[in-house]
Image (cartoon, rainbow, N blue to C red):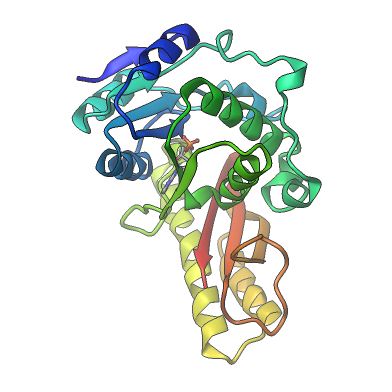
Length: 278
Ligand code: AMP
């Protein structure tokens, strides 16, 4: 049976005496196949699984979609029940309020790039709240999707920096049949926009194919993908970059393996990200 918990006091008491290992899946709800794959991984590796559902205001900037972010607690509960999640932790903003000393500021070199360029305090907000969740729940393994690759990178930094005794388990990107990476924000897309959005992944596949062919240099490869995307006027590209597999630093022009292509776009007001390993 899935138990819903809303207070930090209760979650601390319950988890204190729960069966270990404890797997933790932090989410912002509106659960989809991507989240479910994280849940399945947790279920297969732990005696207890905990899913948090919390739309973290600290990671949204001004003018972003905090108010409009999809929320569907009834469906989320059903999904968690279906996959035999032991606990859902869905605290209020009051419960998760942080003091000045609890703020975590990740290093500039990992935040002033990629998504951090357009979303200034995003990763500070993510690191602060994930750290608070780790403190409250003390999990053995925490599951994060590779779709949010920069986030995963920053969570790894967090755990190393503060010597948090949790294993970080990366989970592969789950996609819709069209190739579009599953995302809560896909809920905002019209059918037509969704069809167009499928080309985001196509541009990444094209880049992988082009760099592997040996015919194109790295910058030519990126240019080819940008040209491909330019036929879809609705897609506004924020970045299309190649970044090192281990530390997300820039990649040499002659490198053909060991990195990711990462992309962020806007379709209308909807911001979508994706990446592919090369
Ligand atoms: P969110 O609810 O968007 O904050 O995501 C919660 C977790 O699910 C994060 O670790 C995400 O990286 C992960 N996630 C979201 N979408 C996907 C996906 N399509 N495939 C795999 N993991 C995902």
